[in-house]
Amino acid sequence: MLLHSQLTHFIVFSFSSSSRYFYILFSMATFTKLCVTFSILVSLLACFTNAQLSPNFYGRTCPTLQSIVRSEMTKAINNEARIGASILRLFFHDCFVNGCDGSILLDDTATFTGEKNAGPNKNSARGFEVIDTIKTSVEASCNATVSCADILALATRDGIALLGGPSWIVPLGRRDARTTSQSAANSQIPGPSSDLATLTKMFQNKGLTLNDLTVLSGAHTIGQAECQFFRTRIYNETNIDTNFATSRKTNCPVSGGDTNLAPLDSLTPTTFDNNYYNDLIANKGLLHSDQVLFNGVGSQVSLVRTYSRNSIAFRRDFAAAMVKMSRISPLTGTNGEIRKNCRLVN
Image (cartoon, rainbow, N blue to C red; front, side, top):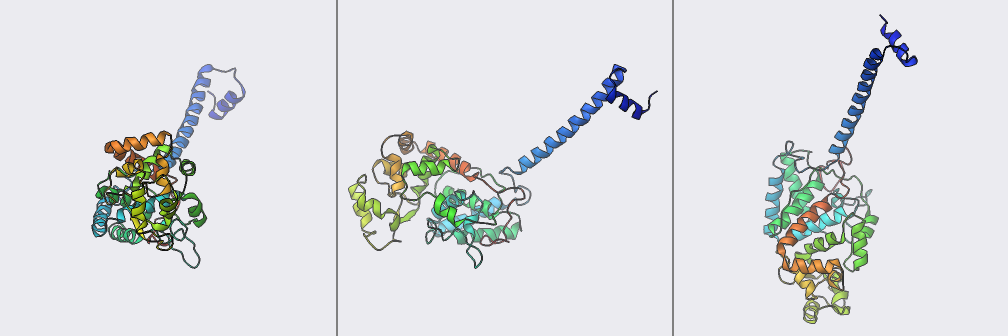
């Protein structure tokens, strides 16, 4: 009988011995390698899974989360219907700057520059107090558990649903950014004067298609815009209904009145429906970046017509595009943090 050390030495260096012993030891070695490989794969899979968002992420750690958010958003909408559009805009601007990470919620401090004073947000981004209120209620129930980024995602969904729009299952598990980028906010958020090529490119940079751009623009079926963002359109552009332009000029003079408001949807600005697309067909898009979706040819023109006739298709596609947008570069796992105060890093 060979000792184990002898047998091992013999097998490694001599292949003229018993095939039976060789087979047994070879199988054991192979099995060991397979076990190691399997262990590595399981670890990788665990990391991969941890990096994914899940609608049940807080199922055990904060089971009352969604009912809390819904309750607070109901109060906010009842107080001011416009706030649903404001929260939606916050979420959009958040996701387009380094992903959906709650960075837009951070205040400037003496040593920290946030995104609130970037051009697209300064004096126009609003709804922060609503997110603060929701966060306070969530913290009272589930301390240091739910991110501000996830609260913003849920509040956006509920605000739209409460205004008559679609609902959807929100993937959860985002963590909050510790950093912001005012320069990225200035350069990566599409502006109201953007042309179709620019809009398409900016959405493509975020993994979103022309169809996504067309359906997500339908968010402008609710909310209002400041005069400074549509003045050029109503005074200088020709592809605009003259009566519509005249009516908007009454509250948006050639100079002054920059913050005067007008509804983005000409008929139902506090109801989430498909009238936005009817406005585009009638050349009543308030912003240049709206009307370019129905100005010429292209797949988006056909889609505008489809959504103007088919509200079910619009609601379905809008919900799907919102989920897609909500997955842009989230911080997960051990990245980022769970902020105690949405306005400040821990």
